[in-house]
Length: 262
Image (cartoon, rainbow, N blue to C red; front, side, top):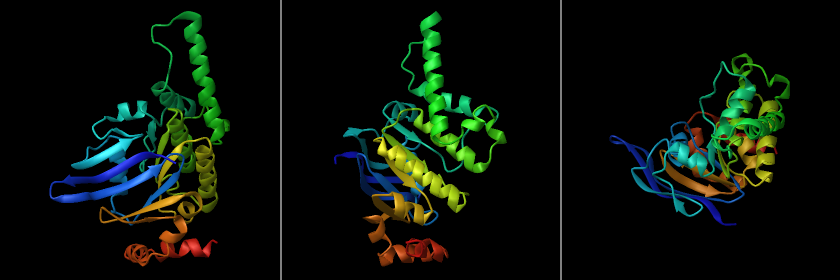
């Protein structure tokens, strides 16, 4: 498979602090790639760099061979990059449908000057696509509910549906199972697989080691802003450096979870 996303020598400095330091890795088209590491390893900074919310201090970021390091978020969205956020960014006083329609507007093919019957038909088509996405993430029963009324896990699903509404080729998921129980996490894992089965490449950031091990084809491990290792999901957890990095967070279950669940 060819590379869809390539980071080469990417660094991001905030004053004298190197949040990301000489990071290089590749995400193959059609793959699910995990990006993991202890708290403060630089994972969300990398996602912000890829999605245009930050500009690298040094290095290049390529999407399908094109340098996109200087593109702003809306340009990257138009190029096929969508994301979710570690801290939910939804319109809480709007309905589930309205939130997903916001994502549809980014990929809307109709022209604003079209009026009358054509315009109404296009709007109906956008609503139908949004409804299918909402059904896809299992929220049909709350489609007209305000997001503020939903559980935390449901809100996560709304955010994934909104990201998918842009018709991405690369989906960046930043902690999509944070705060979820095992059943909810497993359901998100199945959703990620089904999205990937449709040809969407996924970069998954998550502290849920079991989820990453089960759904990812490759895993990149960050520690202190640098790439510690990159390997298959099983091989990663056999690397003593990875165990040491996670044990340093005092979260022994993070390292032992893959073996316990297999």
